[in-house]
Image (tube, rainbow, N blue to C red):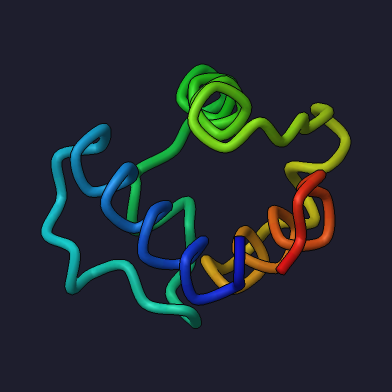
Length: 83
């Protein structure tokens, strides 16, 4: 997937899963504040990304992901079918 495809797909998934308006999901927005993520929801987020996009995340990856742009970049860099 291209980065643009990833952005569109993850925004739709997160808006539905976390029941928030899509306009709150911007590249520079803080993930934890926007999604109201605690440790349990962070695990759900990891599982959701793996299920929907086939990208595995480890718990030690989570602290590195601060903004949605970080998530987009992580998924793009770790997907098996870039482009």
